[in-house]
Every structure is written in structure tokens, then in C-alpha cells.
Image (cartoon, rainbow, N blue to C red; front, side, top):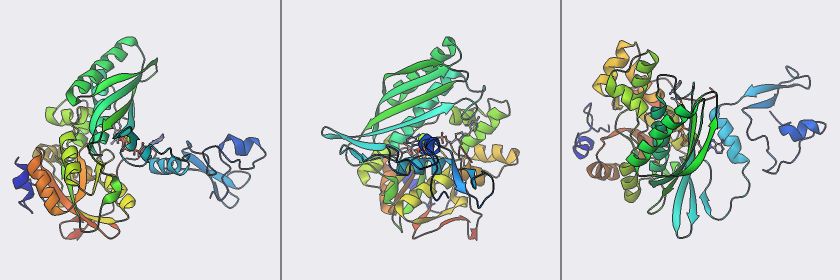
Length: 380
Ligand SMILES: Nc1ncnc2c1ncn2[C@@H]1O[C@H](COP(=O)(O)OP(=O)(O)O)[C@@H](O)[C@H]1O
Ligand SMILES: Cc1ncc(C[n+]2csc(CCOP(=O)(O)OP(=O)(O)O)c2C)c(N)n1
Ligand SMILES: [Mg+2]
């Protein structure tokens, strides 16, 4: 599809379209020392890596009136962010975006890590090579979302046997070649279930594109298409390797590196890659930008084969496209003119799906208000 034309043809489907712990008894310190909260080295909020916390429950649950409340993935990350030590001067942007940003010498670099775990990111339907490939691709996508060029990875893996480990590494190397990244090393261990963790470094030409720069009035656009990966996932879960294009979309995502680089050059206001699903990832942009957004589900770029497959499974295509995740497309907030220029410069189509507003997150179906939506949450 001609991206430039697509962006210039609003409203047509298929084109671009505009488309209480009041007092935390946390951590070993607090409990081991007579339940007195202890100042942890990371700061007085402590308790960072816990997915559950003690919440005052007015006498219920715990004998001292506390019970455990599970917190979701994003609250875990928020707590990690709140508990960071003071950042060294080289850290330009710490945890919280798709990548952290570092100044090393004259240059700005971005750094991130993402892992894939059997049973949670894939099942036996994925070959070890496919797992290795995807682990690198999803990290490349985080670098793309900063507007940076992926350069180096460190790859650590756990597998039940050496054959599986080697097959997985074959996929890692294939992805390294495809995305132009060099594997610097990693670690190999025996594990009951296949697990791959990739850490990545990318190089910036200028400044990064953050999640936090969106402004009311910006248009919101996505690259490529949504929902195809979800359709492929459903096919795989059903024991099929077809429709082949959709299965491939799930197993071999195509991170939008070129588009991310061009977007940074053009000074788009905000960008994020779509891993958890548009509904959640748009919320990350809005929360960090102090804005809201309005997204029209009828404008989501859902391909005909995706639509047909999802309908055949009794799923609602636009809903899945907004919530199922693993699209690894870019969501970009920028003035419409900037998006038109970007569409003219890059291959994947760009679809305007909504706009940034002053506050509140709204989903529409054309003129109608749709229900609130959210995406993937590992602890949800
Ligand atoms: N266990 C962790 N320790 C430190 N930082 C983390 C951890 N988990 C996530 N983060 C950080 O939180 C932010 C959001 O993470 P995540 O939702 O995984 O982002 P993404 O979808 O871009 O991979 C990122 O900046 C990431 O580096
Ligand atoms: C077996 C299995 N269950 C569920 C999913 C769906 N799924 C797993 S992780 C995920 C979201 C993205 O993964 P995450 O680890 O959160 O990546 P990040 O946001 O950190 O880039 C989705 C939709 C899957 N791919 N495989
Ligand atoms: Mg992550």
C-alpha cells in the first residue's frame, strides 16, 4: 500500500486512515526486626520486587489486620520506579519508557530487556528457533519505539537440553542478522522450561522519542496492522499452523525500525511499541504525557484475513485488535502534517486511529461510545 496516499485519504477503510499499606511491613527487614519498617538501601518505600503487598484490611485476613493484595504488572513496575536509587549523571531517562536512555561519551544510547517464558509467551507450538527469533525481535521493537538503531544484544537462555538451547540460539542468530544487531554474549543454563531473556542496546542519532511527549490535538497513528498476531496465536492454540500469514505474524514480528528512525528525525511527539495491546499501550502514553485520548475502534487497521479468521472463531476483530497485544507495531502521537510526512517516507502504512485529548481515555465505534478496554497484564 502507498503509505503517503493512504494517510491522505481519511475515512476510507483499509487505507491510512485517520483514520494500605499505610506503613509498609515490607521486605525481610521489616518482618525479621519485630515488624518495624526498615529503611532499605533503595529508599524508604522498599519492597520492590514483590507482586503482592500487605494492605490494611481493618482487622480481616492477617492476624495483625493486614492481608495480601496482588498488584498488577504495571503496579509492580511503578513500585520499582519509585524505589530507584539516585541516578548517575549518564542516565538521561531511567526506567519507565520502552528503553532507558544513557549518555556514553558523546552519544546517546538506549537499553532495554524483555524475556520470553514457556507457558506464558509460547507453548510447544513454537519451535525453539522461533522462540529465539521472537525474543530478539521484541527487543528490537523496544529500540525502534525510542527512534533508535538496534546495535547489540546479550542473550541468556534456559533450556531442558543442549539441543533445544542450540536450536533457540539459531533463531537468535537469524534475528540478529535480520535486524543488524551483534550478539555480545549472554548466559546458558539448564531449565525445566525454555526461557530466553534478551538485553539490547541501541544507538540514537539525536534525541529519543519518549512516551511522555504527546499533546492535546496530536493525531494518534499506528503502523502496519493490528490483530493479525492475535489471530495467529488463536490458530496456534487451536493446533493449526495456518493461516500461514497470521501464524507468521505471531511468531516472527517485524519491528518497525525504519519508521521509528524516521519518526525521530521528524520530531514526532510520543511513541510506544504495541506489545500489551493498543488499549494498554495508549494508556501508558496518556499517563506519561498527562493527556487523554480518543480512539475509534472502527478505524483500526485490521486486515481482511485477520477479520475473517477472528469472526470464524466468534471473536470481535476490533476488540481483539485493541486488546490482544503482541502486534509490535508503533503507536505515534504527532501533528497530522508530521504523520503525513512520515507516511510518505516509510513503507508500512500509517493509520490515524484517533487523537490526543486533554484527559480521559475513550473508545468509540464510529459515533458511538464503546466500553473501556485494556490489554495484557502478566499479573492480571
Ligand atoms: N523487573 C524490572 N526491573 C527493572 N525495570 C523493569 C522491570 N520490569 C520492567 N521494567 C521497566 O519498566 C518499564 C516498562 O516495562 P514493560 O511494560 O515491560 O515495557 P515494554 O512493554 O516496553 O517492554 C520499562 O522501562 C522496563 O525497563
Ligand atoms: C502461551 C501464551 N499465553 C499468552 C500469550 C499472550 N501474551 C503473552 S505476553 C503478552 C504481552 C506482551 O508480552 P510482555 O512480556 O508483557 O512484553 P513487553 O510488554 O514487556 O514488551 C501477550 C499478549 C502468549 N503469547 N502465549
Ligand atoms: Mg518488557
